[in-house]
Length: 77
Image (cartoon, rainbow, N blue to C red; front, side):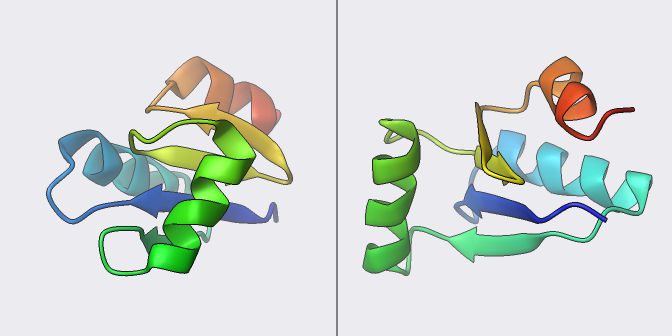
């Protein structure tokens, strides 16, 4: 299995789509709510240079937004 972190907020529809996609694939992930965790929000910005969510970290590869082809590539589907 891959190490997957999803930086998200509770109100972000694309964050929900990303998490639903990982669930559908059977890929475990860590959900990090950057709306509540200031340190995690800074970590997300440091990794991606982005303020928007979702930011997805798959084994150190950073994907900004719900980009299914990039997710599949990172997971080597």
